[in-house]
Length: 153
View 1 (cartoon, rainbow, N blue to C red):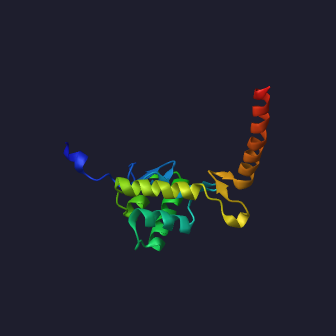
View 2: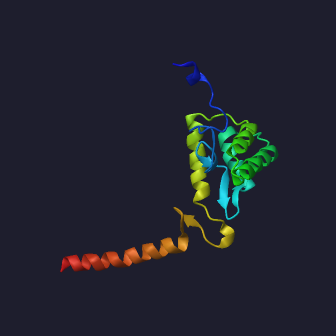
View 3: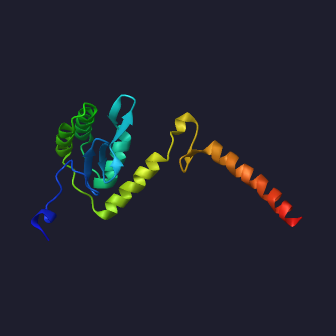
């Protein structure tokens, strides 16, 4: 094993189990910490970031300081300043995850992606609005007896 293989990755450089900052955004073990808006990159809502970081590192994360640094990284990416975004990413000082935590983080990210706020009146099932899913199931249940009756003749 080379000496460079045993060193921790440089903060901001793509890492499958740690932080990755590219022109496509900033993520932790593949879970985006920034999202794209019409105006460019912005930090995900605080409750989502808190949930992701709690899953990754447990309790005791200073969310206020991290949110500020995430904003810095997003602002730098919006200016096209990848070097500045990577510097802001290094300031986050978040360690790489082990595989078990990375898998847990991916599960939380999946749940966050596939949940629509109940305040808008819909609940998502596998990313699809419930009303559409129910209509699909109803149409399937009507078509199955029709198909079986056609096969019987």
